[in-house]
Image (cartoon, rainbow, N blue to C red; front, side, top):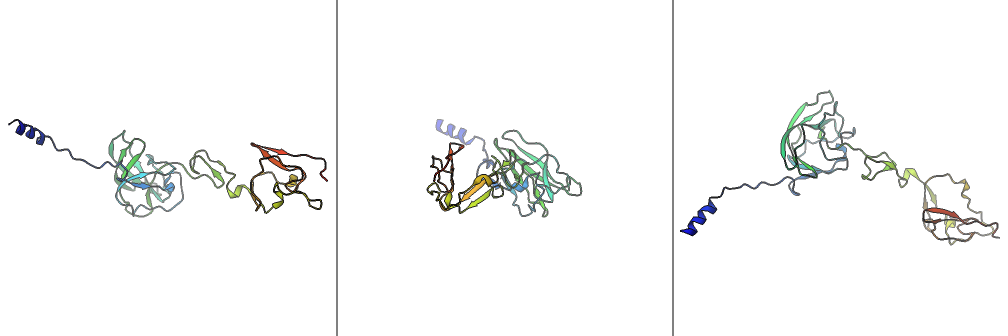
Length: 245
């Protein structure tokens, strides 16, 4: 009788339904389109072919949907950008909210979509619907690409863009100057290399003898010049001599 009583208690427990958590990897698709930034005015994104379901934006431009209307469209890499007309949920919460399509005629909600948003702690996931037509796309983030010739700690996107000497438009090339090798000794009939005529700026060395500035002291008359320049730590040093011949 005692065993039967225990069985009744066990089977009398309420049934708990287990639902998949959209925050877990595998339960969402990834959106990685930097063009979706609300500050990007170029592109032709279209979410008409988007499958309904949960999505996690991971782009370097930012991962939150704007909550203010991108007035007059032509933002987020599309003609009619979609924004969130509401506020974000608290940690662990899932909310129903309306996403609005901002038309270039000034209508901030020419089309409305019932979506869901869940706060996963370090990021949000969005239960999105395909759009009613093309040239409509969901917005995410606010940053933009750095200008050509600039870079940043954010993978080439704002903030913190700065001059990038490694970009081809920012340096000149010294081609095939094999005499600049530290193993080349200036000959009496040579025309010595003279860098006083060099334009100050960034250079990339493209030579079969090597492309790095020598970081050990070199003798006078080496490197195809009378007074070779070499590098110690981050400083450049010049070897001087009155005459080597």
